[in-house]
View 1: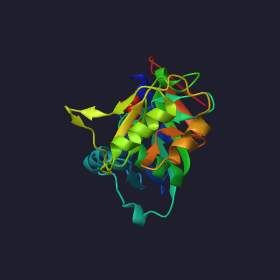
View 2: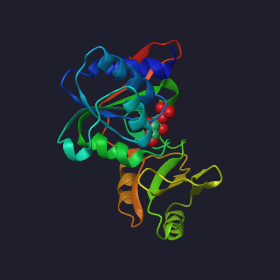
View 3: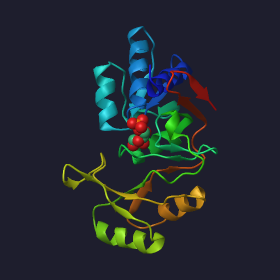
Amino acid sequence: MNGKQAAGYRAVEWVKPGMTVGLGTGSTAYWAIQRIGERVKEGLEIKAIATSKASEKLARELNIPLFEAADIPHIDLTIDGADEVDPQMCLIKGGGGALLREKMVALKSDKLIVVADASKDVPVLGIFKLPIEVVPFACEWTLEHLRKQYDVPMEFRQQDGSIYVTDNGNYIVDASFGRITDPEKLAAELKAMTGVVDHGLFVGIAETVVLGNEDGTVTVR
Ligand code: 5RP
């Protein structure tokens, strides 16, 4: 069992019968969804909501009962991955492009458990490029505005030679900040910018982090 699998499996121990659970996105959340699928097969009764079309597809394949947001008044627990985690449990997310739905589901949840391999544990956020989701209309203006404000390398995410489009029909700007010394300030500034829908900084949202080590052990904090 590698670190991602170990973290994903361990986090599912928090899932109890009757809960409504948010299903994260990415290669670590994948293992949590797999484990939830196993427990559902064994008789666990839960409701779930997915944070991306990819996780929705996986959950359907595993017969995990999925519900639309309109039918979910409250989420007990969400298990999701991260691209970076700092000592204050601030996160960079969105490497998989699902940051907006991930943040909406996390904010609706009583508890967000982050699952990641130990390489995601960093002293300061910012080596991983920060994803910023922008509306397609006048996206060049938004990029120009972002570049003027921050003067760091940033570009539209590409996929297979075309601009990457999120599940919400938006684009992503990946920005290389290098060191984000005040994530709360940057999060607020980006959120206030017209044309920006949201960004991958999660500040004060994660409650528990489960880090999976290469030897299959986990560290919980
Ligand atoms: C997707 C995410 C993922 O949780 C994040 O990119 C981590 O993915 P992985 O577990 O594959 O490393 O935020 O938008």
